[in-house]
Image (tube, rainbow, N blue to C red; front, side, top):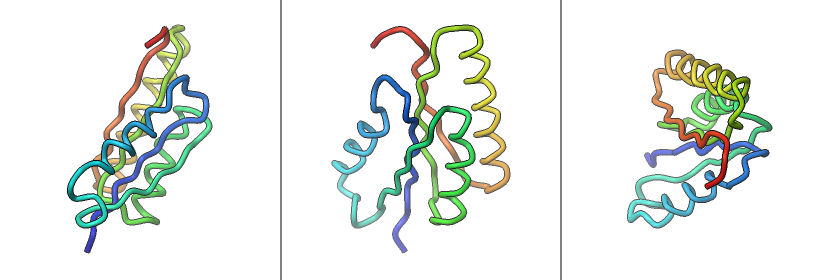
Length: 108
């Protein structure tokens, strides 16, 4: 059985990190043979955990990669912390690893 990797990103990110991850994974030798990708986009970072959990449970993904870009304000940092807690809960509820990549505020 082929592994499935979930890629979840956010609509309002200033940079499409999900597309970069997807392109990089597609370049790997195992793509299409050892693993396939399942991608979805959610409105904001606090929605990442639910989407990861859904893809793990419904699409049988063996890992979920979550990408988001919270702003630089204190409230945005708090939101990023809450999103991280949600991703940890998703891992515990599904017994499946999730990995998050965030770029806080500012410019690239």
